[in-house]
Image (cartoon, rainbow, N blue to C red; front, side, top):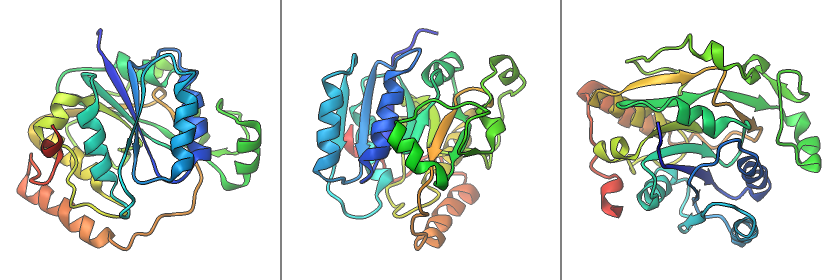
Length: 263
């Protein structure tokens, strides 16, 4: 399927990690049509880094920023999706290094009324010095410093064993997902009532399901390598849980406070 794709990378105050992610974008076997950085309020260092990369990027690289008012990832993602020109959104976090065929893998599995999610391999804390000193962006099953290493196996033929599902998977992560922009708009994007860590991604997935979409897991393809960091505060997790539970019970397909205000 020929499709115009937009890669969104969410970030906050970690330019060292974002630098590796952007380098992994430049190493892609298939490039997206554009890259947008969804910046939840980082300082000038991140802005300067993006400006440096813009000089060498062969595709448009945009920086979508708003002021730091706390963890408002759902807001900055809505603002960023609204600015995309692609038909298809591929979404990662700014601490997730992309496998060389990451974009290619997502695009090859694009299917109507379906969203995708891929695998995440964790880079361990004791490997961080080496990671940043060597600017490492390539990993495989034998690489040092990773755990759950079977997820690092890139074997397209095995990915065919995974079919579409009409249920919410606990393995779904917003740091490695893709969807049609039109589907995102049809459920009004992320619910901006979510603040702090947790549930904004899975609640969106529930509204996709309630709308009639299926999902497909890109096992053995669509791989990212997640850089270790300290856990974010979960002080609002109970409130976020309640929002998601209401969506599930009421089978909601639309959130009132979403992306439509930016379109």
